[in-house]
Length: 144
Image (cartoon, rainbow, N blue to C red):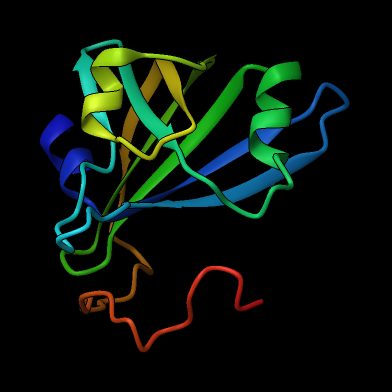
């Protein structure tokens, strides 16, 4: 499972605030100056994984929710192979983490997930799709 989720180019997270209002967010890879992809996330051990928080839309919906309600759901989908997995757990936001700064130099902070549940889902209704490499001609951050 570790290899499967680390090799994906993106995942989705679900969070909720202390009132139970939900939010779903996309998390994708960052690229270095040479155009090479940085790791999506790192599995630290069988109970912990970490992913970076990069500059985004400045709404802080996900992180704000995490501050008031530490529960998270993470959905991983591999459309090319029609596979998916889910991880549920509790988060801790880490503002400074030197070891992870070397992995994700442009990250603003890190989300450490203590895993409580991991399970695969069936392939039913996952459309078969082929990913294409990112292109400068595609929409860029801030286009919406």
